[in-house]
Every structure is written in C-alpha cells, then in structure tokens.
Image (cartoon, rainbow, N blue to C red):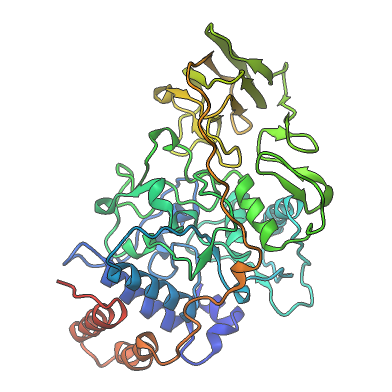
Length: 494
C-alpha cells in the first residue's frame, strides 16, 4: 500500500511531505494521546467483519488515520493543533458544528483513473460511483485528462471490496471527514476510551471549525461516514461508541448507502442550482440533476416535499397515510423484500408510538430495519430497529411520524408490529435550522500557515533521528514521547 501512495500521490513526493513523515508524526501523535501507559501499540489488529471499513482495515491501523485516510503533513498538522488547542482551552462552552474538510485544495471533481485488476472489481467501483452521480452533481470521467484525480488500487491488507464501503471511501475523496469527528459529536455519542485498543485513541479526536465545516446540516447518526459501535475495539465483546439516545445504538455505522444529509452536503459543496426559485420543505433542496424539482429526505416525495414516498413490495402492498386518534391503533406488516413508507399524523398534538415486535435479522448495525423518524427534522436518519429487544415506546416531537421499513437485504419473510395513539402534549418548538454560509468551507485549512512551527521542527529534526537504524529503540521512544507531548500538544504527560 505504501508503494501505491508513493507512486500516485504527488504531494507526498515533496520534501518533508513524504508519507513516511506522515506516519512518524501520526505514530507520535497516537502515542501522546494513548491513555494506557506502559502498553505498546499492538503489532497488528486482527480484522473484524462488522460491515465497515474500520473493522476490515484494522491491520492498517498503524498506517492510515482513522483506518482509511491517507493524510498529508499539513492535514495532520491541523489535527494535532486542534487537539492541542482543545487541551489548552480552559472553557468548554464554545460550540461549533462542522464536518466538511475546509480549504478547496482538498476537494476536486476528479476523473477516475487507473482502475486496476479484475473486471468484477472495476464494476464494483463503477457501481458505487454511479450512486454518487445519480444523487449529486458530481461526475467522473474514467481515465480522463484532469490533473487532480482519484486512483483506485487494491491492497493486500484490508478488505474494501464492497460497493457500500467503496461509496464511503469516495465520500472521503469528495472532501468529508468521518461524521463522529464533528465538534458537536458529544451531543450525540459517547466514546468509551477504556475499550479502545492501545495506541489507536488518536483516531477519535474531534475536528474544530478551523479544519471542517458542517455545510448547514445537523449531525447524522445514520451517516455513511460514521464509525460503527466497535471501531478500534479491543475485542467483539466491547463497544467503543455508544449513542446518548440508546434507541440509535443499531443505527450508527451503516454502509448501505450515503444518507440524505451525506448527499445534501456534497450537493452544497459543489453547488449548481443557485438560481432555482423552489421553496422546498422539510429540509429538501433543488435537485442538482434537475433544478426544477426538489430533492427529498428519505420517506418523502413530491415537488415541494409534502407527499409520502412511493413504497415498493415484491409481494402485496404496503405504506400509506395514517391518522392517530384518542384510541390505540395497530400497524403491522409481514412480507419479503420490501421498502415501505408510512406517515402517521394527527391534529395539534404529538403522537405516542410503541413498537411491539420486530422480525428481522439482529445485527450490530441494522441492515434490515424499521426506521422511525420522530424528531422535528426529517433530514436526519431516524432510529433503526432490527432486534426483538429493541421494542420501545417513543413520543414524537411534532404532530407527525415517518415509519420506514427496509428488508431488501433479507433472505426470508420479515415484519413488525407497532401501535400508535394521539398524545396529550402539544408539538415542541422546532429547533432552528443550522446556518449555511455558502463559500465558508473554502477558507484556509489550519495547518497551511506557519512553516517553521513545532511540527515542522519535529519532521526536520526528530524524524531523521527516529529513522536512523543505528539509534537504539529506547532513545527513539524518548524522542517521540518528549517531543510530541512537550511541543506538539503543549501539555505535560504527567
């Protein structure tokens, strides 16, 4: 893999920008953040088939940031400086919400270049790219003439041969960090540090507003860019990420496809419908592939997004509009592969909903599910249920609830049963929509500033010493620990 990085990445050919420098700086950063004193970084983490690239790429934990990102020195510098500032900041009250990598230099609409090896592997990649093309304004030209390009190559270690994971990796190439690295992630998840494999804690640091931008959309637990619950875990029996709302515990880590918010961010990033007069509802926006219609959150449709999306059932029928009254009503469905949408509405009251049973394959992250959108913002992925023990009761924030049933990955007949009734409470005030300032994401990426700071000194002075084959291992460790903690993070290890 390192040979391919050296071959295809121009920036890593520059002096002090080679990927070896990135690795040494990254290892030092991880060492500084490790809370398991005296434990060495594991030689190799065994892969876990949890359906995510994080689990499958565990053997690459020492070589790639967050298991699947090849950073430049400047990008890693920005991450280190952000962590230093976080540690030095006395007050934790400032809240900023960002996700997209800032600085247009880290994004491009690229040609597709040098797809190698097997025909089936090529089709896998083309299929993933077709999804992004069908949902966004981005287009690829295979082996095109552009200077900036995306290169796909196979590696011996790590298993990315799945359309779902390819779609995730393409998200990075379009300019996205992992969702859980947003500054506002602590409002939605908890990181359980004691179960993170020693030396990999640095993969959980948050970005700041200087390295990322949220493009005016809320945090999405159903983002295709979100870690799964077992990212960098010591073993299968422990999770490293838990959702603050337990109902979303089986939602994070999905790789079925990019979520509505994932797609919306890409379309805002490569904005094309600036003159459209459409006033789309429910967080929708003009479709970049046809600026005369709205692009709708999952479950909704119509020109201005006030209708229910059309359901698909291979056998029978499903979906529809329902009304909650003062009496409990039942909604039940049983069938084969289906994608169904129901909307439950009432007057000026909220809706109480109780899930009684679910007959689906129980997965750590649901692949077949009942999804319930009960919050005010239908842009966000609802909580997904696929295990019998997930049966729960919830009260909507507004006077409507969306129910989505997806069993397209199920090889037997599934189904669910739930009940609903009109609640006595009035709808809650809607949260203000995040502000989108077009072009704000193009501000300079932190890390592109001073070229004579502590990180540059580390690369110039410390890394050559680390690479010296005559230097004893113990002094190498001392260089890494002393310099990284004292200079990069600006804190005492004690």
